[in-house]
Amino acid sequence: MAQEQLALLGGEKSVESDSDIFAWPIVTEQHEQAVLDVVRARKMSGIEITKEFEKRYARMLGRKYGLAYNNGTAAILGALYALGVGPGDEVICPSITYWASVAQAYTLSATPVFADIDPDTLCIDPRDIEHRITPRTRAIVVVHYASMPAEMDAIMKIARAHNLKVLEDASHAHGALYKGQQVGTFGEAAAFSLMTGKALAIGEAGILFTDDRAVYERAILFGHYIRHDEITLDELKPFVGLPSGAAKHRMHQLSSAFGLVQLELYPKQMAEIDKAMNYFCDLLEDTAGIRPMRPAKDTNTTKGGWYYPHFKYLTEELGGLSLSRFCQAVGAEGSICNPGCNKPLHRHPLFTEQDVYGHGRPTRIAFLDDSAKIEQYAQPLPVAESIVRRVFEVPWFKHHEPEAIEEHANAYRKVIENYQSLLPGDTEKEADTGGYSSFFTSSKNT
Ligand SMILES: *Cc1c(COP(=O)(O)O)cnc(C)c1O
Image 1 (cartoon, rainbow, N blue to C red):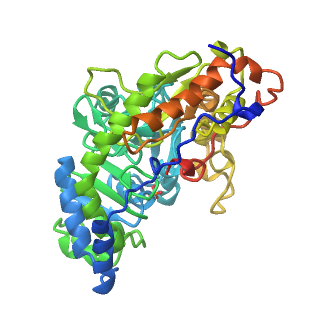
Image 2: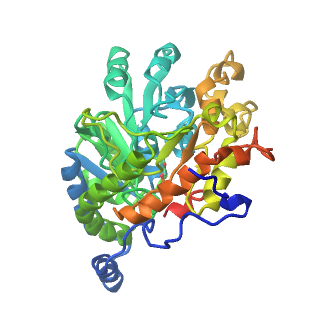
Image 3: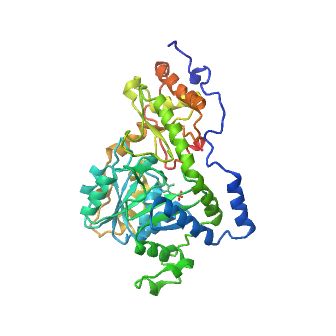
């Protein structure tokens, strides 16, 4: 193939089409009507539509109880409390995730313990869990990261062997299957963010699922005081009336009304996204320097709505070209290529030094006995620390429009075929990639 001038170096752009292929969520008249109905009935703060939303979503997922929240962060806080996480407990969580997978442990006087990730799934590495378990360990938070299901067989086996609770943070993976089973149905509890950037997007909202009545009721006691009439357990009854967590976690009914419509439309949208994304991956499957990240074929493991899709980057196949410069070049072609993923949490000062509440020592160890040292909890995690230079976010297509998808794939191909022209002037070798929030760095994708 003849050498082409890359757009970054003054050539023509590869992507000409300007479609709504990334717009998300897809807002229909049905959504608008549902929201208007709530506004006109002045039911924004009610709970009857929300309860209907919970019921339908729980049925779709195949779980007994759904409890809706004002956001995913609150759902995870409620879930951790409901699972019994409390003072001095440790909660194991992958370092590569959004902070709200585990930072709420502080609120419960508990200590997050970070584990490394598997570079092939970007999810917690089951081989890095067991040696972190101590007598204080109470729970494992599993994140199905970037829509890839975590290795649930191995993780559940470890959890059972050590009598630990598993909370699935499925905020990236609505509708994804692990060996044919929906994510969010493995652990004692699961939480999903439903905020506007996510695959099942209904506004600022979240939801907790469980099959355990006690978990459901404890979560209600903690942050849903107007639903205390649902509490049946004798040990909780004396405390009804006021929220144990001093928290008000109710979902806005504009979200639940929007959500009822979205639940109906999502399975079909998810099927189309899956087709579009697999097509894009197929087009780039055998390209040097990059590797699509998707579940192995014939495993009945899927990425559901493909939230925050990533590819691997192999700099050694492109003459050492930095990921940052590679992504700049693809971006200049008119496609989407965001270097990195979430930054490792275990390196952030919130988890290495900050004394949030004035305990006189880092909050991370403030709830442990005096002999605890921050160094024990601040060890390196090699994969988590290097992964931001080895993966990048690709376009998240919401429609299967082959021509548009081919333009984006061509943008990648063009950069890869002409990578040598990018080597002079590549000063981005150690550039800081990734961030602490995916939504605001990848807004071109939504
Ligand atoms: C978005 C997200 C959350 C928090 O959800 P919000 O609805 O934004 O509060 C938690 N965990 C992960 C992995 C997320 O991506």
